[in-house]
Image (tube, rainbow, N blue to C red; front, side, top):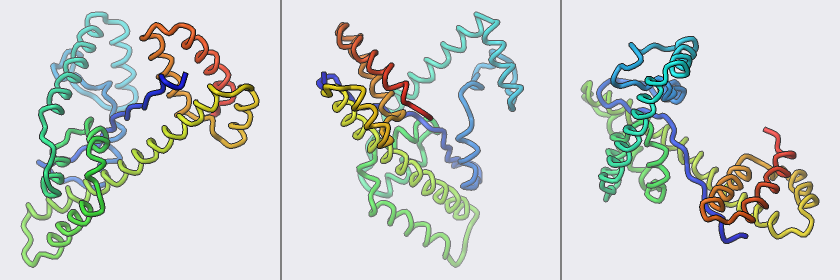
Length: 244
């Protein structure tokens, strides 16, 4: 059973580094709340609007208008494919200076994914390079507007990368632990007793459920019906003990 275990992917997060206008690091917190529900580049659903009521209206129109819903899904698929092609066309940075520019040129929806891809390059040496450039710009005798803009975007980048790395490393640790726990469940002679022991240790969590879901889907794709059915029963038992 353990042979079908596989790692989880990492979801995208909305960080924006705007190289054309001056932003503050607090802008990232606002940007992370933006949802793709309002994405309508061709104006099919009318002029853009913001706020909870506007989003509800957008959803209502999608639910009632089959053509708009179909076109919206088409746009989402096209955007996903565009980002995939762009991602594959990008060259891996060869040094820290290039890596800084690489992340500054990364689109909002791609930043967390790029952090995962480039995690091995986000070392202390890289952050020392980033701090060094920031120091030179901050203490420059004669500052230009471009230099001030550069400080703002580098500060925002530094904050976003540190937060992204922390989230990514935590996710990876949770995935490793979830794999171990899933193996423990699969090899247990008394699943209920094992689950109760895991409850006491606070090991029943979202990562474990997500890993079970992934393996169930993998089993179905491989036509491993019995394995899928067994894991679905295990998931049902795990879900009883899961609390958010």
